[in-house]
Length: 388
Ligand SMILES: [Fe+2]
Image (tube, rainbow, N blue to C red; front, side):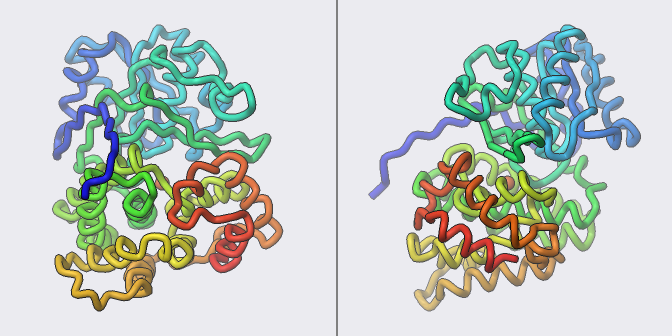
């Protein structure tokens, strides 16, 4: 019996090696002047920003550059970027980089389109809704994690309140997502591992969420298989084109999956952890995924049993698979790619645990509501303790 569901992902996906070259024609169709948003100067130094600007110019699209964005974009940086875009007459925002650059571009598209500070859309009783005034967004991903090119979500950090909510609406999908595995070749092993694990966490959570759909289930299954097959290879040899290609596709599938199936308890926790301590998103997910799986698996045992099978790229579940086998398979992958560090090694203190659990309940409540076991604050504290 197919369950009732709706499915909406209005993203034009342009996938393949060398597809950066398509950016000119794609952006030309939606804007006249683009703001190229990056996190820091790395891509200016490597020449990627200039390459993109040239591709745009060849198609008759002008551009300006904005790089003053942190790896976890701050609401103040988004507002400053939106003001810069306004001053420069930009009408389309391009996020060039990992999830942070793409999220920052989404944030600027919201803030500038509505002419309001981004935090107005993030939190609080008078939270503003995001409308069609949002400027068009183009996502060019250089990592194979976060999936931001395929989702409506943007994660914004407020340093003053130590909050890191995810925001989004039907208007914050990228109009065009360019996924060019060639751009990922230079990603260092550590970043490959942590972003790749993020893609796995997206796929596990969207697959087991109560909002899972028959379409996202197919995406998640394929994404988990690809990650089982290619993440170790991509970490070991960044120039392994087949592995990079497979991870890029897995990440995009994971992104589309969380656009609809959303994320569950582990991402709820990871956001709150990231607001309190300066952890790397994928590394904190790796520290907590085994424990969140153990917590949630009783709520959807059939699906949790399949995860280990998918990771091994097997097609038949003989019924002998135990729930714990899936967790072990994930733990093996975590160890093989060097992400086996507990939260305490990532700077989280025992004294932060209550605050982190509170944060999940306060601003990531949706993620625990759609978790198959719908954890309480006490459960969250327990998961965090076990993940230290
Ligand atoms: Fe994520």
